[in-house]
Length: 314
Image 1 (cartoon, one colour):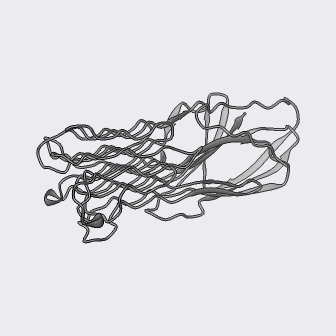
Image 2 (tube, one colour):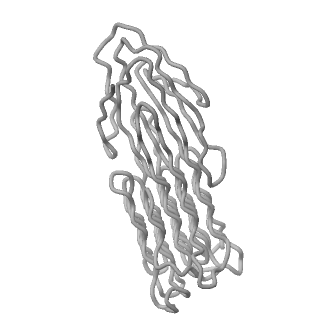
């Protein structure tokens, strides 16, 4: 059997208590590397907005009582459009387990959601929510996809909920026929991520950032769109995962775009240079940057694909 120790902000490795015995395993679909004293098997998703079974892991013998550290990050959400909110980061879970001999696991790493690129007509045209990452078999883990960022023309009042929530749009021209209400940030999932930040309903109409694994997306303020929430650093490989996407600016050639959160968050579109949004980083589960002015076709950035890692002391 196995034991699980839950953690998110303090992601520390657990060492094996036994130096003797044997540990043997098989894996498919992953990449085997070493980092310091650890062996890592990493599974990533190379598709767009779909979840596929990306690999397997089997423990044939564990008389050494090896402890496996896992990191499970879902796909990030896509950014909204036309002064759209940044996409939320994919949900992040990390813990440890001690597998018994003759146990197997199925690995499915989630894909990032698509950024919004259409002006809505009383429809929900928020960025697409990322897809979940899962570990099943001898262990059951589900990280939820990051919420898509809210679009100015959406009939939704806020960014999508998810592992981390999508950021709010600059304002809502379709929701209940009310153009004066800024979009709110979507909710994050407890233990996996944070909520998105709200937008601003005065010119130049800046949006909020998507939530990150360890910090809430920043709300827009004045002429500055909100930055994406920060991700979390996994101490085993010293890499940050799960950054939220930055918010976009609706009015062309003015304002300041939101920066992406550390851990793969994309930056927003628009601003004085009418910059395009950037995608969340694949393999880190970052949210896509929020889109800018629709007349300049500054679409929301795509969310970054998720990742699952098993690591143990060699």
